[in-house]
Image (tube, rainbow, N blue to C red; front, side):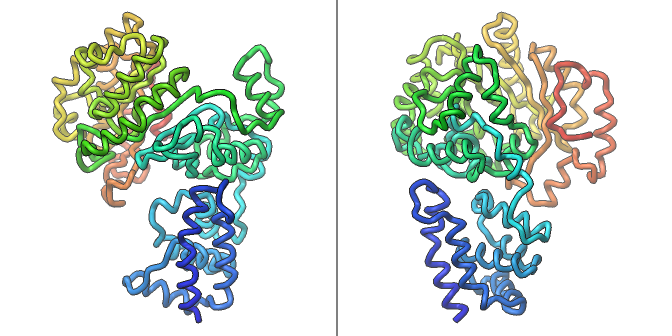
Amino acid sequence: MFDDLLRQGDARQSAYAAACLDPAGSSHRAADIVEELAGELSAEWTEERANSLIGDLKQGKKRLASCTLLALALVSVRQGLWQVARDLLAFLPPQDGRWLFVERLAEAAEHERQDLGDPADEWLKDRFCPMPFDQIDTAADQSVHFCPAAWQPVPIGDLSEDPGSIWNGPAAQEIRRSILDGDFSHCSRRHCPHIRDRRLRSRDFYLAADPASPAMERYGRIIAGKEIRLDTKPFRANLSHDRSCNQSCPSCRPGRITLRKYDRDRLDRLVNDNYADFLSSAARVTLARDGEPFASRHYLNFLQAYCARTERTRTLQIQTSGLLLTEALWNRLDLWGHVSSVRVSVDAATPDTYARVRLGGRFDRLLPNLHFLGHLRRLQMIDVFRMDFLVQRDNYAEMPDFVRLARQVGADSVLFLRLRNWGTFTEEEFLNRDIANPEHPDHDRLRTVLEDPVLSSPEVDKTALEVM
């Protein structure tokens, strides 16, 4: 009987997955499917049966679909079997952990409470987030979102669809509805920094704002009229659908990434003309959060198409390692007048350290490019030139020298960031590298370095390092 119920649960995985991806068009929400299945399984679920099943899962004797695992975890939470719930959730594929229902269930199991609510729910009821009304975000799986998928997992469409259609499509309208109604039912409480850190302003703030401000007037009109279909195009875009990179860095990827010619040509067909036109009136277009734009043939082709269609109004924001951004390439792409800011991830102040944290990167090739960017900034040909430094065990001692290097080449500012584990390290390796962790054996040495007066300069930002 119980095994039959498990099989029936697994049979609903397709419907569950569809509901996760398309809440506006699905006849059942993902949580509804899990709730229904949990109701069917609850009478058969005992601690003894749970421990037996978990043993079979650990030994590979059984495999269960995500919706079945979630239903069993939900029953376990309701029965107070906290460790059972945590064990079951550990078998979920990593991508399943981003859905809001899964996030709530994991929080309940972790904190041993049966209520799946979140303290942020009440706070969100009168808040407003502009992002679904202002921007799009493309991902490496070719899905299109309003913001990073970790913050808002539900896509509004994918790159194969007309961008104008998905901008006001059913999923887009449903997500905007959730913001205007205050339920934020597609937004992560854990991963969205604007929710997690309580940064969102109230709807009343926008309604009472000075109408002389076009942006505030627009938000107030949207809130008052509950507008979920917009007559404007995105004002901002973050393009991250090509992860191509010419460097192998332990902090983010184990090897270089290069798209096959077929995939590159397909992206060119889907993106270059459609999105160059669609984003021609955007105030900001960012490349590329998850790769190296100048190592991507596709992004190079897009830049040429985009620059040919837009006025020279400095709309481009570029995130790069800087190694390939030469003066010759700048001229070839005719980036003059199109770039507002360049943010360069360097992570070192000396050739030896650079080669270690950037796995063979040539510091002597990087330096002329940094000087070129500094020259552009001095001539006010770009508005921002920032240098970034990901702090880790292998480079923290060079933080003061990195600030001096930034001054030497003409950067405006320096941002120090804490190391994150994006799945490239084992837990032990990550703990060994994350010197910002107070438990790291060399953490006190990092604190000593942070006492250097140069790191207290106005152009230095250490907040993302999270060392109090």
